[in-house]
Amino acid sequence: MENIGFILATYIATFVGSFFLAAYYLRRGNRLAEQLPPEDKPWI
Amino acid sequence: MAVTQNHITGTANPSANLSANSADQGAAIEPARRRRRSATGTPFTFALGVATIVSMALLVLFGLLLSPPDVTQGESVRILYIHVGTVWVAYVAFGVTAIASALFLWKRTTSLTWDRIAGASAEVGVLFMALTLFAGSLWGRLSWGKFWVWDARVTTTAFLFITYIGYLAVRGLGGSHQQRGRRSAVVALLAVLEIPLVHFSVELWRGLHQEASVAGSTKVQLENLMLFSLFLALIAFTLLFVWLVIHRQRVLAMQDALEDKGLDYALAARQAESMPATERVTTHASQEGTA
Image (cartoon, rainbow over the protein chains, first blue to last red):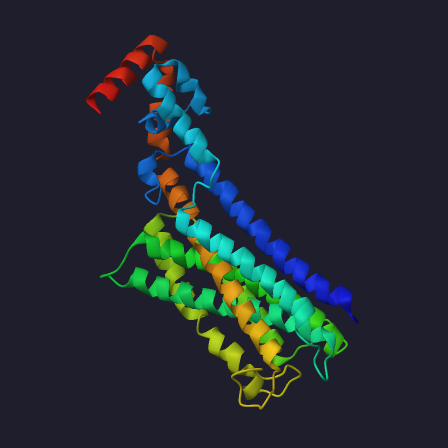
């Protein structure tokens, strides 16, 4: 496959970027949740 | 019950409550079990996450392996599925930001939840706009021989990206939540006006960027499997967008709650710490009784 490096770089950057944003949100959410009582987390 | 007690006393480890009494044991283990899952997640977001991962895996399969190369662009057309998918999400995200901002400003529907949805959506939109520019520059290198050209579409897209970084900066300015909401909502309603300019820039000005591949005025013929891969990309990225915005909105809600009541919780934790251990157990037992 020609230009494989460019194509893979696009896919990898997109998935890695999305993964890190998702991981950041989950981690931040867990940290904040430890400091708050359940009434401040109505979705639980 | 033990969950509340754990937060008020500021106990880091929920198992610290295990020695209180046997009734506490089961209740104290419960948050530990719950902690294994995301604090911002629900069964719905879990299902959404699974659907996102499955659709992304299918996108990789179809985008990289099963869809055919293009007649003129060859294999580099595979970047299309990422490029169009990410810019679609960025447009949707900025549209959601504008709608949520309008709902926040409208007196009948005003709620800080709309403001948080607007902020969460803009944040995700900025990430996807950055990925669009990155994918576009790599594709441009293959198609035009340059990573960057001052083409109308490329330039207006970069300008839109910078505008929403500005929007996020405005959200980070000081003031109350209401002030933040009003200020950023006005910026969002002005910023969204750029989207039609970006979208129609390829028709308004002559440039290197091609017109829309599917719904454009030009007759671009996409092979069936290519078309399927493109729609798969739109679905996969939309699912990812919804998942990210739900989680981010909940993180922002907790952040706001902590800013509002953080001092109260810290004082309650200090008071609880200063109480003798026996008194704490008695208080806890009496709370259990009244509950």
